[in-house]
Amino acid sequence: MAKIVAGIGSSHVPSFGPAYDGRKFEDPDWKPLFDGYVPVREWLRDTVRPDVAVVVYNDHGSDFSLDRVPTFAIGVRDIYEQADEGFGTRPLPPVKGDADLSWHIAKAVIYDEFDLTVCQEMKVDHGMMAPLPLLFSHDPDWAVRVVPIVVNVIQHPLPTARRCFRLGQAIGRAVASYPEDLKVVVVGTGGMSHQLHGERFGHLSETFDRRWLDLIARDPEELCRMTHEEIMAAAGAESVELIMWLVMRGALAGGAVERKHLNYYAPMTTGMGLISLAAA
Amino acid sequence: MDEKKDGPQAGLSDWGIPGTYIFDHTRSRVGFELNKLAYSLTDPQNREAFKKDEEAYMARYGLTEAQKDAIRRRDWLALTKHHGGNIYYIYKLGAATGSGLYHMGAQMRGETYEQFLETRGAKGAR
Ligand SMILES: [Fe+2]
Image 1 (cartoon, rainbow over the protein chains, first blue to last red):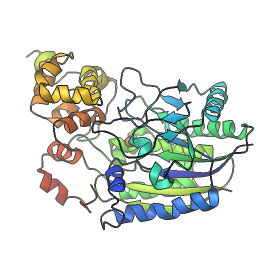
Image 2 (tube, each protein chain N blue to C red):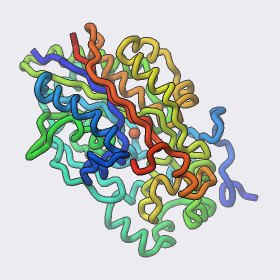
Image 3 (cartoon, protein in one colour):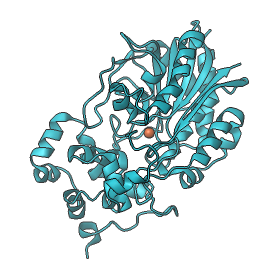
């Protein structure tokens, strides 16, 4: 049977892209970010050894438009190309999917009353591509297959924090009912504190981010009780995408978790957080 | 003044967070054509067409005069505050007109780019 073995919470800041592609690993302003990912990448590669990553992210007006906005969607293909976000794409191979597992999750979760939009053609943007190469090797090809889960965190009304957590629980049940022996890691992306518009552009809150990093492991119920307004007022309007970490946490909720890694750095306009949780 | 044509749209929500314009139905309705134009710039051919003749390109979309004018002025604050622009879409307009996110942000804060960078902890990480 398939099993969820670990969860990762990670920011997906677009500037990770050019910094990574430009190999700024030793640049003093970037080193605190990249150094945080090294032990997590090694732990995933050497200890966790996942076959599949369920990656929870949002599209930023790159492939989905405002014509139709699914609250929750799932990709069900064997390959996902990168979206062009307005300045071309990055030198990375296309993301490998797992259509069989994706369709299984779609079916199980929909019968579990989470009505996902099922996508047979979908391009992925920095929501997925910013953290993916920091977590998994891609040379010559990606070390994991990916099941993309897309959440609307752009156009309000957004799903509630608790709804995200419950979706994660349903994904956890869906994975556990898959007959193939697969090790699955769930990655919740986004945040942390940031605001990218209005006179409040650049708002950060390390206090909020540290609290989130603590509670996501220890007491996700407290995060589930947070309203969008509370999160946006404390940590910036665009920080509300942190609710996607609760999908990851919900998927691990069946058992105890152990926090393995934690990194935090806020050099510019976004709190860059990273946490890893092992399923006990 | 005909607000719909000339000024900021009426009826935009206020969520009570200063300097913050939450992208809800009030803005998404008003900004639908504006964000659609910005979204179209994910296609390199459209980017070329836009750069070649902005006015002709804007005419393809049902923008208000005020929205067109805010694009002409590269007024990122007005686009997100008054005209229903969502930052993730408007960002593509910035890219096509040579303004990166931090330049856009500095302007929205009412600062120069250099002044804005001085407020950051490690400004090389950009
Ligand atoms: Fe995001």
